[in-house]
Length: 519
Image 1 (tube, rainbow, N blue to C red):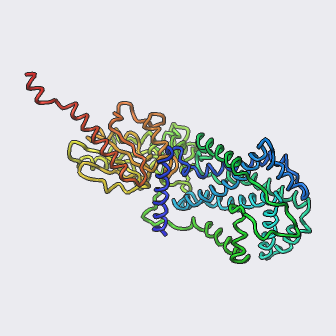
Image 2 (cartoon, one colour):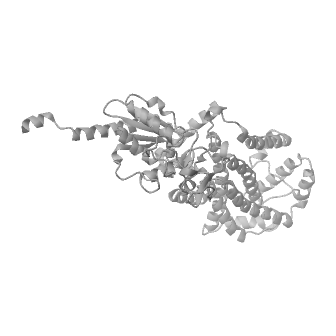
Image 3 (spheres, helix red, strand yellow):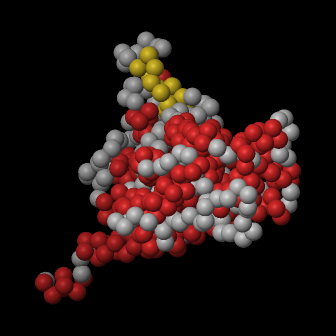
């Protein structure tokens, strides 16, 4: 299973890198699948509210009201209907892609189990919302779907046959049925909005909205699709006749051909099996080698500044009243069940500085597996072993790649759980120890394994977020590479930094020939 996940992760990296060639990393749609799905839901809901005002919820008038929108001479009805239909299709497609990507990245384990489990019911809810919307058109496609659904429901025990007979037969298809379907079709999207809110409760600063240009592009694309390829109805439904051949909306009506190919019972077992399998995925255990202890607060060194609370990507750190005799009013507290052991909180702590004179320094919040004192000792040891005029320290994120292969007599590699675990003061400290330059390598931009690491680190380096990299540090000695598994990108960053170091050295070194001429 680990091999399969590794292969899927590599494929995701490759696809994300390919999209980066066409889009700016921050605008890469592959990184905003969840946000794009939410945008599609909102477009579908907004257009549906307008369409409801123009819809006749009766068996006799349903088809005619849909046809009226389709044939609107001003094309506004076509735009409205198409936007509603294609946004709903996009919602289904983007949600499935979002689920597949999160699965490929292993985001169903550890602290992400809650988001994973609460996302599974969304699949059922959005499918039911979509299929009932197609029924409201009451054309030949809708009649086929209603009939096929009745046959599928009859394969269920516990009164499903009675349900199908009372609601999904020609005799039962009356205005009351349409009112019921309309109620379901309106209620489910509202329930989806609430369920989405529950889905993101355990993440800090969730990306609910795509970037502005991506949002605008999505709206334009859906509008053009609605006008160029309008969503149309088939012939009116005739309860005495089901068409033998018709086109389907494969985003929502895919289940009917599958039932015809297999059997109603087999598809129920398949649907139940897939749902249970998805729900059981968080129980897959991580190997002991990859487990890390959660962050731990050291009260004597915590001043209650709350920077760790602001930076934690999963809301694992909270502030609470002080429990010791300190003059500070508050202290940080870690919820171990929510901690991803990313170390971002360590990078945000003002006491995580290597310039303190204490031999065994302790930060206000520490990662027990890699305390700050250990990082300082390792940095001191590795820099002391470097040789040559172009000494470089590479701080690499373990989630991105194994950067230890780049270690050599002129390059020291310091591994971190996340690039944002690096306190900015460690960069200055490495330069003070004798390194000529520092390279920071992490996950691709906007694709941090721990969600916010790249954003926080960049803001710290730019002086926009505490703790800041001090202004006295020469930025020409620092190279940041958001490369993911692209080792060539890191090698290019190392070569670029060495080139700059050589240029500085040539400026500072006197030319012997010119000195002799001057004499």
